[in-house]
Length: 147
Image (tube, helix red, strand yellow):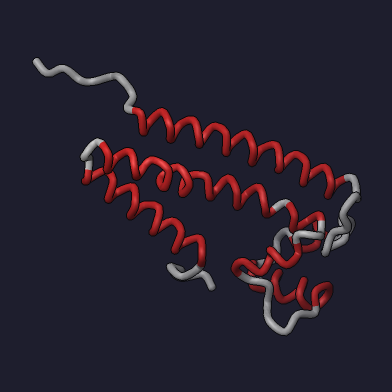
């Protein structure tokens, strides 16, 4: 008969604590950003009364349209270029999504030293690899298909 350890490790608790705090922070920022957008505190790039015109547009056509009609940039707004538009209500809403997505990366980075300290090298290397892969994917370096 085997006995399974049902106690969470220190790293698991730390991971869960960071994930919880990050989730609540991201959610709070999402609510504030959406309120700033809907209440018109920050002007949108795409006027609210026109946004529904773009809902069924394929992504590439949407990017071309908003660039042509509103942004007038030399290149299409792809990747992390939305960061330049954080002063606009509609693009400010991307920030909490990025925060929520990045919390997992932070969790892996924070637990890695503890895993090495307790000599769990396999898990430590997997946590490091996960953080690196997710960071590279978020950066756009590891992109596939789409764009």
